[in-house]
Image 1: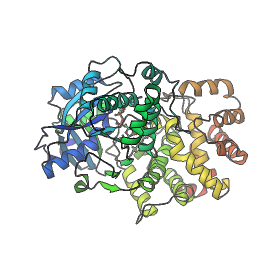
Image 2 (image 1 turned 180 degrees about the vertical axis):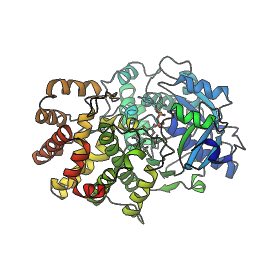
Image 3 (image 1 turned 45 degrees about the vertical axis):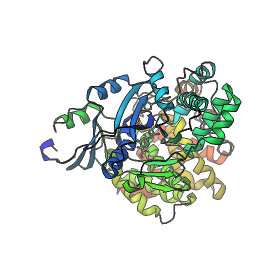
Length: 497
Ligand code: NAI
Ligand code: CS2
């Protein structure tokens, strides 16, 4: 559809805050399209100018910081309702952008800002791997180089946990009350996990500091949801054609949800007025979302990538893939869920299919496939253990097919031999396993199941499940994705006819 046929509704940023009250770590696409949008809307409605944003990248993407600074820290969010309607939102709540990477100039400025008494909340989107926690046990990875650096150099940290500890240490020393730490990454119990990383790291520095953090600092959990694909050249060109030449712009769907545990001792923005759900316990919301949305995303990512499919909408255009998702949702994911009160799994997943089918987003499967070692425990594996405990392994055919596809994906090629990057903290480990066992599918399955940082013991010890994985892997390798789905998920095969 040519740009002139898209109806654009423009929402300029009519106000900017005068005071910075929130620091964000992880100045990525999602932060710009989710938390910052809620803040802009809160400001427009309430006029409360004390919740200005300081956003920082602490690892990469210094260029983005420079681009934002060159545009008075304003940028655009392109919300595609569909291919014919676009809400173009200007965001002006960011009042400071910092690059505090290991080679960056702004680490001291960031720590000073985090120590400012006016800063009452620190939010994070540093990806699941940014907390340096063992995905299965949740323990801090003290052997990871960046964490080892922060243990040895606590006042010049490189990691998100390290920066939080250093800033909290400054606030404690100055007699300043601690900020609230609000994780916005796709992890279960993300507040408790962030607390564990921060307290564990602090204990290496000063046990009294660790005790103070444990007793005084709030780490509420939150569930976040908005599909915000990484911007590609074509996405940017589409906006330029609409007169939006903004290198910091992001594109996303219209849908947005934020469910937050209400534990902010120093106060917070009036998020409820913008539809944010403030709750006592986020668990049912996050489990539903991580397993139904993200679990489905990962199925599409690995099976679609092996089949040479590029995007989410292209994958769900296939009746077989839609049938696979229906089977996964109805037979494997939903039965073990304790849904939030008033929620309906069928209505939720029906809306997911519509969201996935949004062909304006160009959501690349390769992006979703990234960091599988950090994502699959909460998306598939924990639920699989619950299912195995409640039923027989027969009800895990889609999950088994997904795991087999992920294992095959980590070889670095699709089924036609086309190479792809394996972007994962454990990529080297996977490459070694494929080198050692690539010719022996049974040994390869056992070698992956032995990765205790990923697979729970209950799955590792379940021989019938291991046999399901082997059967699925062999079908993928011998017959391809469509045949494997048809053979293992007969209802999906029916969809094709
Ligand atoms: P992005 O690639 O645009 O940004 C990732 C951010 O994380 C960057 O600021 C990067 O510097 C930082 N980062 C990466 N590794 C890091 C590390 N080891 N330590 C510190 N910072 C690190 O990705 P995007 O789209 O912003 O997603 C970020 C996170 O937001 C996701 O991992 C997920 O947890 C959450 N999220 C993303 C959604 C989306 O659709 N994009 C939706 C819901 C949640
Ligand atoms: C995706 C998520 O990249 C991925 O792993 O599954 O970022 C997904 O887009 C969001 O969780 C949607 O809220």
